[in-house]
Length: 150
Ligand SMILES: [Zn+2]
Image 1 (cartoon, rainbow, N blue to C red):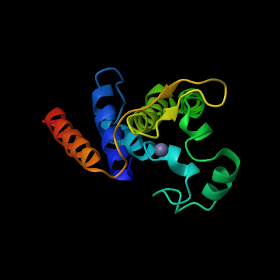
Image 2 (cartoon, protein in one colour):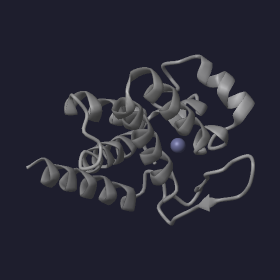
Image 3 (cartoon, helix red, strand yellow):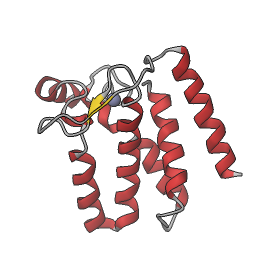
Image 4 (spheres, protein in one colour):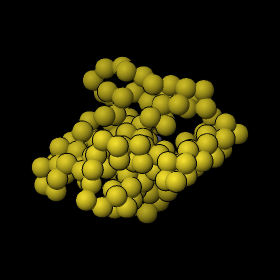
């Protein structure tokens, strides 16, 4: 999926999670969720975030694209560390944004292995990255998010 679609998933998942998580500041929570929806693609030097950080190339060499960074281990670790250090809501915001990315990549033809490299728990869909269906999904997410905010 493209960066803006990941961010739209991060926004929607963040808004939906406000029913369960009650952060002190909803705007910071949603902003963290949206930003975190870009984190997994740090393993791709040409991604929106990867272009800004040179260590993205190193991650790509060692882990490959849609490998370890696209499994559940990193968001669980981040959630644990941030929840212990800063409280559960902001750790949850990172987890939700990161998970939104994994979920949305799981809808694409390339898919993701959520438990890489331990085992196969493949999530794979039919959406072509950058294709017409992804654009439709993006607009649907934006409309759903607007409805949730109203
Ligand atoms: Zn990705």
